[in-house]
Image 1 (cartoon, rainbow, N blue to C red):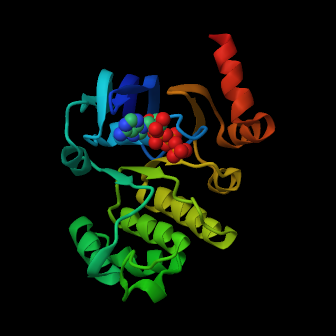
Image 2 (tube, rainbow, N blue to C red):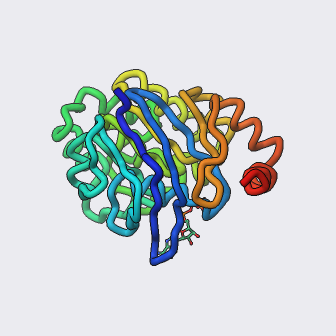
Image 3 (spheres, protein in one colour):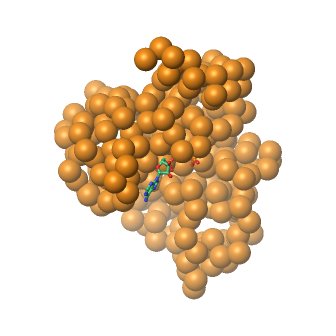
Length: 243
Ligand SMILES: Nc1ncnc2c1ncn2[C@@H]1O[C@H](COP(=O)(O)OP(=O)(O)OP(=O)(O)O)[C@@H](O)[C@H]1O
């Protein structure tokens, strides 16, 4: 059965329509990439799927395991295995990363993976420091992915897990995404602008969102190649012309 289905979603943020009819299906353990120009609505889509109150679903539905969860709050969706990683994680003063990892892994039964994941993401030297406090951009992104992975979600919604990271961190993040997908069978929607990440992870499909609509979907490598070749301007412009 399809794990997650978005059906003709129309979503408003701050009174303006941002998503204008998005439909998307994600099966168990599938990895989907979401690409698109700035302000296309990628974060808004993840927020709507997670159930964040900052966005308002005007029409359309979100189904989880075939059940309509459109009206369910974020905690209820989290209980059903949906985890959302923000673009900018908050600093937690007085809470070392090790304690946070212990708390999360204890709750989700993933204690056996703390060491392996912290090693894969090269976080060992940060485990004693306050979570996210003074972390570099790359360290933040790696630490956040670490915590989301420890939740062993059924569906991870990852908003630019590679933003601002150097090439070494990019490979670590790609490796961790593949590991989590294979080891936990976690399905993912990953927002990214990075072709190298998509090619390294592989995955099921990539989608291009332009001005609140998905205009292209296909095999991850070929969609990423198309984006590089024609640019969002070309792709989004073409879709506009076809309407
Ligand atoms: N609170 C708000 N009030 C009004 N407009 C908003 C609000 N939050 C977001 N928007 C608008 O919604 C649109 C989509 O934003 P969103 O963050 O979803 O884009 P995105 O595709 O994730 O962009 P980026 O690649 O830059 O992260 C933007 O035009 C943004 O300015």
